[in-house]
Length: 203
Image 1 (cartoon, rainbow, N blue to C red):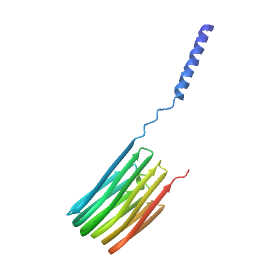
Image 2 (tube, rainbow, N blue to C red; image 1 turned 90 degrees about the horizontal axis):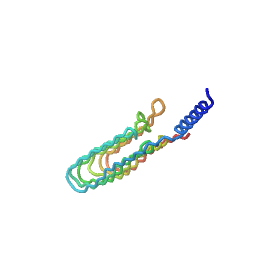
Image 3 (spheres, rainbow, N blue to C red; image 1 turned 30 degrees about the vertical axis):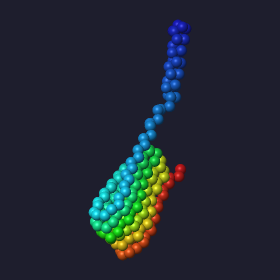
Image 4 (cartoon, rainbow, N blue to C red; image 1 turned 180 degrees about the horizontal axis):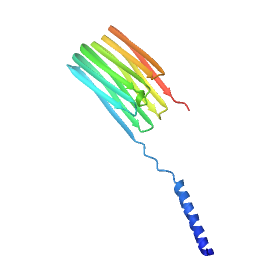
């Protein structure tokens, strides 16, 4: 091989190697972070009959929330806020807040919130039900997941009522643990209930 041709070949190989190395050194373009917030708010005041049904289900947050309520007669005052916040692959939060005041009629409701372990949730669920003639209640549900390393399940409720009010809670991990709590009150009662589960993965 002639010296000139050999030099050109070597130079070409060097240039090709530098080009490949530069291409490999270019960092990948990060995927954009997607943020979505869903808010449902309401306020009602008056007398008569009413029916409300709300459902939130999100498999990535591992949340299932159902709220069904119906009333007839009496006087109703209520405010509620249901918010689902999603920062994809970063943070998922569900918050349900409610103020309820109902008197001199017939009211029934059933609420359920679950964070199923099947979808990566904390494995907790709770149900609250009421049927009676009057109730004053302040209630908060919250589910939160941060970076797949921190999860929170929270129920906080204060209730004063005449009727039948019940709450049940279960925390379950298959073949590992099971914790349950069930309460039922019939008559005229004031009840406060706090359930909090926090799970954190520490490297």
